[in-house]
Amino acid sequence: MINPVNRYCMRACKRMAGAAAVVMMIINLSFAQVPQAFKFEFLVRTYNGNIATNTPVNLRISILDGSANGSIVYSETHNSTTDNFGMLSLQVGNGADKSGGFGDIEWVKGDFYLKMDELGGKNFMLMPTQKLLSVPFALYAQRATNVDDADADPANEIQRLSMSNDSIVLSKGGGGVDLNMGDNQTLQFHDNRLYIHNGNEVELPFNFSDTSAFNEIQQLTRNDDLITLSKGGGSFTDHNTRYSAGAGLSITDTVITNTAPSRWAMSGNTLVYNGGAVGVGTPAPVPSAALEVNSELKGFLPPRMTTIQRNSIPSPAPGLMVFNIETACLNFFSGSNWIELCGSCTPQPTPANAGPDQPTVSGTSTMLAGNTPQIGTGAWSVSQGEGGNFSDSKNPKTTFSGKTGSTYVLKWSITNECGTSSDEVIVSFWSCGFPLTDLRDGQSYKTALIKGQCWMGENMNYGNMISGTADQADNTTVEKYCYDDNATNCDEYGALYQWGEALQYASGSRIRGVCPDGWHVPGDQEWNALAISLGIDQANAAKTGLRGVDQGTQLKLSGTSGFDALLAGSRLNNGLYYAINNYGNFWSTTSEGGKAWRHAVSGNTTGIFRTLNDVKEGLSVRCLKD
Image (tube, rainbow, N blue to C red; front, side, top):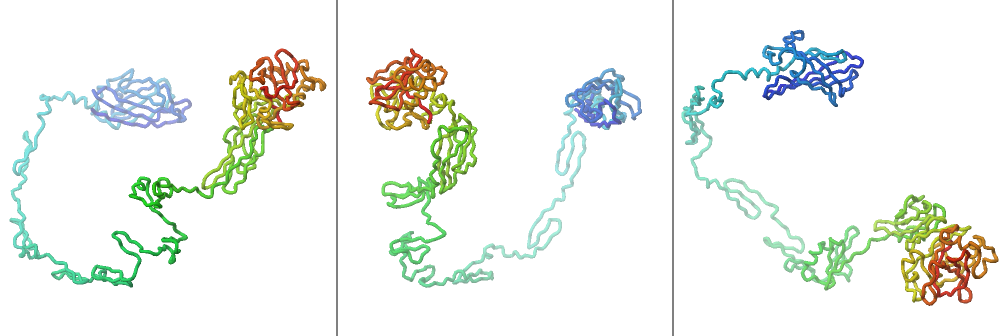
């Protein structure tokens, strides 16, 4: 199979408006069964040099005989379109409107030329007529298929090469050649002469009359420090074998003896010091030390080993010390166990203190109160919360800004080479009307601004639930009742507290009690102020019993005040629960005659109640902002 490949470049003659330029042609002939065609490829460009993709092309291809002006021996037309890359691929010999026989072209005659003509206009810049530099040999070679060969078996044409003595012969009468190798010569050695049989010879300048190999051996001997090689091989003196004994030593043959008094002694493979003290880096070790190592530049290095190696020490003596390379600690044997001696890095950084929590910050910025490091450097970071930033994160007293209604956990960290000490502070940017998060347990409460007072919009539900049959105790735990001892009632209505537990057994004009930091249990006058703000006059506000016209309606759930009083009922002083969904009862901090003032709303009335109640009863708590 013959695969000739011809490449031609088409150069633009001139530019024409709206014209497309064919700038490259590739002719590729590939014949298997000698098809009557060869491949012809174009790269098409517009007149301004841009590649023309998907462009119609209508051409006539002609093959001329002998010269660029020779007669046309074959022609055909092609109407095709370029591809997405601007290439146009044709099969010359497979076009339309053929003139002449493509298979009749006498390629063997000599030169042929390729000519292109545009059909339907003059919109292309055509290449001039070009000579085909490589004859499509496959087309010409097709003519060889008809050569007469009576014997169609190619195997009987094979000849064999063979050799007999000095002759090389080619079979089937191919002749032969005689190498004339009858003049073989032999190389020999005799009587100091090296010669070629029937040829030249050379005399060697050596006397080989003595054929014994042993009389050439020399002997190496030593006499004191003189080393001699026999048979005139020379000698030399080895000065390195002479030794002089210094003070306290003597040398006899190869034995060196210590003649000076010494406390060091050899015991097998062990060098021991018999009594006294050893000083390293000091000429006078302290009397109480058996070994003193003194240096301002170097330390003492005990044996270093792994835990397995340490445990493999046979019969370790109490006090034996090694350095454990796995734990990076000194280890000593106590007599029964190995003890790790891991001291802490020094100096440790100053313990961090981020300052007090700020759960209800008004506005959107606050000053932090971290401690100043004495050792190490400090830095603030935000552990929780989004949108906050520090005016100077390295300043312990920096200003932090955030978003209203957002709660942040900020970390103050003090760091040095030995580690980091950290402490966190909670900052909540809050204004009345936004939900309040109780930082003690994460519960969220609605808030409402009522005539200048900021009230919680839900009952408090903080503490550990206990049975309604038991009184709440003055201890370190906040205790609560849930109606019918059902925890889901606390989730819906809030908790119930005895008066002492509600105040956490404190006294004064503003008592936090069970409320979050920044809030307090309201006093009787603060409850009266709420009633007056809702329309009750001053005189009626201080009366006992039912008062007002619609103030209860304003305070109840879905009322206009935003207070959203829940009718949580109560826990009576006998341990029974009473009146859920009928009464909402709230403690004040004000007591009188062993009882405390209660303010309440009822599901059956539109007014509000003010009564003295037994402090052993369990009522709801509504907190008021400080």
